[in-house]
Image (cartoon, rainbow, N blue to C red; front, side):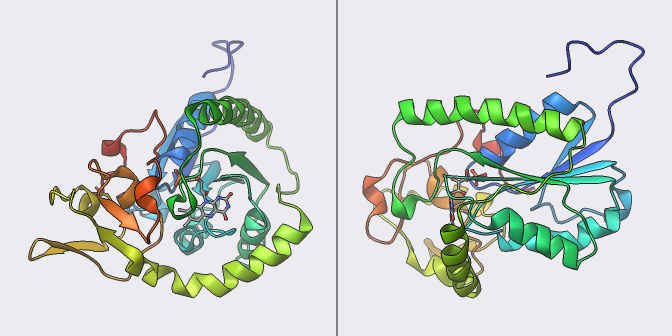
Length: 272
Ligand SMILES: Cc1cc2nc3c(=O)[nH]c(=O)nc-3n(C[C@H](O)[C@H](O)[C@H](O)COP(=O)(O)O)c2cc1C
């Protein structure tokens, strides 16, 4: 939303670019909501491969992404070298999560510092969980409560960014940060092969939507069989968006509800 007090004499909004990464749309919804509040904002998916950092001319850059295994997804870390080349005046990050941001934003700040960049503010937004191996997203009532609280938080983030606040990043309790950082570091090398637990059940009609959705082109069809090629990022877009709910991960997912953000459509995520 534009500021209602904006007048014709106000200076134009600073050019902002928000890079987002998303499996089920929560991050895209946050990025879109921020863009509406900022004005003059371009949204770029971190899965777009044809970005030329030299052509990005933004005073403000935002990174909006989900927390994965209590830390920063590998794809986001891989994006930081490009970000350095863009030399914006202000960088902020929003790590959205299902309630355990843990050390994610501290990790991001430290990696950025090691690359000579400053993270001026880092925010946590809680939204429904898309980690289906552990369960569904919760009742609609619970989801709506989270959406309402997230809307208020995103407005506060927008105000903070517009005021260029410099503040410590948000983080979880110490025990969570210590324990889960250890698990994150241990797990990260295994993520590409975690797709070995995907399978399809009899409802699969070979529509190929999972192939189109996978941001890393990790799924192929061979002899009418879907094959995951061990380059998985665990975004879980394939299992969450399958129109037949025919994809499963491990033994328990058949009984859990699928999730995507209600204001985000499948076409918004299809690979370009
Ligand atoms: C592989 C994976 C790991 C996750 N790990 C965490 C976590 O450590 N803490 C947490 O609160 N949520 C975790 N989540 C939940 C997501 O961060 C959360 O649902 C997020 O809003 C999804 O955003 P997206 O729709 O933009 O992908 C995880 C989700 C996935 C797929």
